[in-house]
Every structure is written in structure tokens, then in C-alpha cells.
Amino acid sequence: MRILQINSHYDQGGAARIVAYIHRQLQKEGQESYVAYGRGQKSKEPNVYRFDLEPEIYFSAAESRLLGIHGWANGAATLRLVRFIEKVQPDVIHLHALHGYYLNYKVLFDYINTHKIPCVWTFHDCHAFTGNCGYYFACEKWKEGCGHCPQIDSYPASMAFDFTAWMWKRKKEMFTAGDKKVIVTPSKWLTEQAKQSYFGKYPCITIHNGIDAVQTFTPKGKAQCRKKYGFGQEEKLILGVAVGFKDPRKGAKYIIEMAKSLEQEAKVILVGWNKENDSMLEGVKNIVTVPNIRDTGVLAEYYSMADVFVLPSLAENYATVTLEAMACGTPVVGFSSGGIPEQLEGNRGIVVETGNQKGFDQGVRLALEGRTLDGSSLLSGEALAECIRRDNSLEGMAEQYRKVYESLLKRN
Image 1 (cartoon, rainbow, N blue to C red):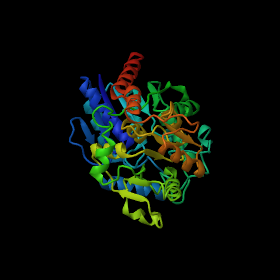
Image 2: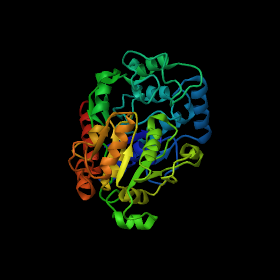
Image 3: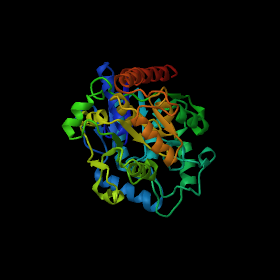
Image 4: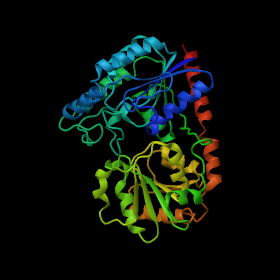
């Protein structure tokens, strides 16, 4: 069985790391696996191909922002992808995130639909079935057709024009042609949304994300990690991710306000900090910033030394960082948005009302004490890590995808 995955990035960030995990696990099991991606660092791994050039990505981003049309540039790059598909001759194409200024939807789907190639499509957000946005929040126009978009200035942003109604219609036509598709999402929440969209004509199933919870993301020893990075053994440490901090969806303001509220009680470590955001921390004394960490081993040490990991996203699917933190034995406090509640079931963390600052602050305080909202004990350490090894293993995720590939091929 020959599988080709397509995504914006490879092994950089949540969805891209899932692509890499699936690719490596399939190869480990003797399957013929390939990955084609558009952006980011070039990989030296076998059967991994980056098909976009930097100028093409910049041009596509400029076109998207100026004209408000996303996914109709990058023609030459997508033709290179098509030639790669012709070379590989995959039995199944596994699509992931297609937005990101790297792909021409029409060129790709004209080829897929004309050649009737079976497709598995994993949704890591909602972009595939909206006119343009990655998360629609309270808007439900995506169910019948977009237009007059309330989020026109959010990613992928438009500076002036609103073509979301036109893009919704074109995407529906292209994406739902043919019957050889299976839609997969990492959360039950997003699966239910997909069923209500124009993808409801296809099987829509849930496969939870898996991570390396055996070799990489494991408890590293809180005491030795704190000593290594210069933190006190008795300090209360809260960890958060600062990548994309300017995006309101990430909930940066809730972390900053929580830090102020807990100034005398804990330190907040923000990993992935960009210096250009320094002004956001004016007057905040207990936040420690750390640049982006590419070494997953180092990242696991930061997860391991924290008392609690926070994820105040206003919209989220099934966050990989949440799994990574819990695999390192650290419980999580997050908002009740998207798939976060699913991830924190069984006392793995604390879920609070989305956007409730007081509730968020109180949830963090309780987590630092090792208690849930109802006063029971939070899972942590090895007990929490074992839950992730059991429910979110790479082997388990790859096995479920392999069964989907096989079932899709049997239908043809």
C-alpha cells in the first residue's frame, strides 16, 4: 500500500508533527509512505518532498491579503506537486491542512477528481468547509454558504475584499466531487461539525492524535529539570506556549491577566516567545520568556518541570501540545472550546468556561494544588503519562489510519 500525505508543513508544529508521526510509523511497519509539503524547513528524510519556493509563498500571501482569495495562487508549485503524485502513483492520498499560502486548490483537485484517487482528509481545523476562516466561533454561515464574513480580518486575512461566498461555493464543488473520500478529525467535536457541513455525504470519523509518549514526551524528572534550567524546587511553575501570541484565538490576554493575578503565587514560563511581543508584558513581573524550542527533548523537559500547563484558546480542535504536556506528567487547564474538554476528561485537567478570566485564574490555582473543580485529585506524573501512552500512542493512531486506508481501497 502506497500512501502520500499532503500538508502545509512537515514536522513543525501540531498538525505537521502528526504528519511526520504517521509517515515514520508507516515506514517502520513496512508500508510505502511519502509526504509532500509546501512550507518550512527542507527535510532530509527519505520520501519527503517540499514543492513550493519562498517567492511563491510570499506572492500567494500577498494575493490572499490584498484580494481576499485564498487557495487560487501557487499554480506552478501545485503542478510540481502533481508531477510528484504522478511519479509516486499513490494508492491513497492523505490530505491534511491545505491552507497556508502554498497550494492551488483547483489544480490539485482537478487532478485528484479526474483520476478518481481515493482520499483520506484529516481536518485539523474548520477551513475545509468554511468560506475562508480556520475557526468560525459563533458564526454558522458555513452550513449554507458564507458571505459578509465577520472574521474577514482573521487568518487567512483579507485587507478589503470579501470573496467568502464565492470561495465556499467553489470549495464545495471541488472538494465534494466523487465518492472516494473519508473525512477524519482528531476530536469528536470537529467530527460532528464536519457531518453538518457539505462533507456530510462522506463517512466522518474520529481518530485522536497520537504522539511519541514512549521515547520523547515522557516525565523527565521535575527536580533535575528545574535544576538544569535554574528554577527553584519549591517554586510554582505554570507553562504556556507563546507561538502565535498575537492571534486573539490563542488567548494570550488570559495568560497575561492570570500571571498578574498569581504574581505572588507562581511564575509563568512562555515557550516560543518572539521579542516583537515584549510590549505585551509591560508591568508583568512573573513571566519568564523562552525562545522557540525546536528540540523536542528540551521541550519535554520544560513540560516536565511545570506544575500545570495552560491552554486558554478561544477555539481549538485537539491540541497536540496538550497531549505532550500530559505525556510528561503535567495536568492542563483550558477553556471549554472545541475538543479541549475531550482531552481533559478523567481528571487529566480542568476545563473552565471559555473567556471566563476569573474561572481561568481559579482553575490554575486549583491545578497548582493538585485539585479539580469538584475537589477531587488531578492526575499527574506517571499516572497521567500512562493515560496518554494508552489512549494516544503513535502505534494506535497509525493502526486506525491504516484500517481507514484499507477500507477505502476495498470500496473501489
